[in-house]
Length: 590
Ligand SMILES: [Ca+2]
Image (spheres, rainbow, N blue to C red):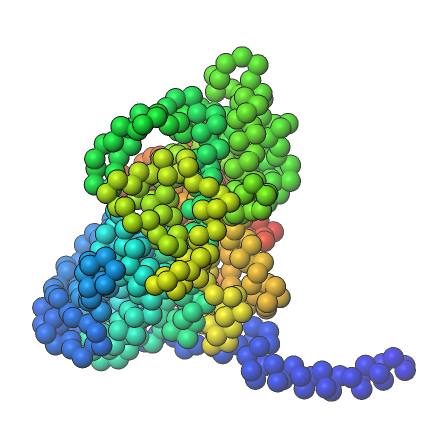
């Protein structure tokens, strides 16, 4: 009885404290503000007149406008809309003498759903990808198809295939975060001048570098966006690029052939003074397929059924062992085994890049069946040695100071001579006119900055293929851990992570990779309906007449249109014990 009285005495201040938390928006999910639903509107005028009728946008020149008839856009059926093109903040760089601006296009449906979608693009940006509103995964729908007004930009430089814009400090910062800062209010004003009202709700989404943009925007611009959709977020992109070069030097030790030439950014083929390892020979397609089969053999049943699909990737890491589960070659390399040296390298690259002191330079990678995919080889062996990808990005965009010789720069020699003790720290460095390091301008600010987004009632959905060869799924788990370290159990009230088992980088791999996460995000933001499981569909042979929509890596043993629930982490798609293994309905998130 005495204990009950004590509890009652304490209860009043505890309840008062809870009410205060609720008022300040720091309490449980029910205390967060509920954002209202967007209200549709229409544009019934002539799109061609918009080029002259839109005016007064700060620092902005509208360069054209036209009508686009309903039809296929980026392979997705899209409604009639206006296309408006323009550029912001045109300038001549005092550093490299080149002209820069933030180029953009906005696609505005005649019948508008009242929402804005900022399409964050991939790679090193540098080109205005069609503003169809790509939503990640194998394409199934788009933001434009759903009636959003969609913006796409080049993020402040006009050189998609080269990284040399990184010599200009402002172009670096525009690429990192400032293009989003400049374009967002401009786009909202542009939309208002077309429809007569600004967007009721605003969303930003993208995959890869676009996923990085998403996480950066969530931390920097949480006051501007109501929903964030981040795919395969390369939010530690400079570190991931360093890890790519580290992988090159690992693969080089087991390469069985050499390359005598390499190619400059302008396409000139140069004979190397000394031939360098052809890292693509480190693991053959047959060897990678064998590795995938061993992972499958060990982990397939962890989700309750042997169905040629590993649903529980996290559990798989605890039971799969390179040492024990992959045969060691006793004779030659015939695809049925790995040499001891190969097993060491396979382990090293999954354990993650390290400097000579043993300090981690990036995260580890999970063992996953998507190691068999063509994307794995492409990222690990080609992009890691190409001028326009990791070597060039590190040399010119992420290192401070950057290299300056753009004419003779070669990717493979740069990767091979990169020093992980003395060169890798340059992604954290500042110098002279380069006042922000790459790790500052490319990455999200502290997870504590998500308070701004959360307390408004805004939401985030993140998805990531567990077989991603370049941006590690484990790194996204680390990001979620860092958010949980700040928000604890409240994290679930505004962030959901959807692992996509066996999906490669943004799409592809032996996976059900076709899904729609924008509708669940909108329902969460505007109706307060927290997302649960989302059905993903495979797109194997015969599922579409459009070749670009087929994923040739869907296993032949699957139904071509196999479905699976995507489960919010940490729940896992688990077999119910009965039912067709090709149907998502035979699985539950547990
Ligand atoms: Ca299974």
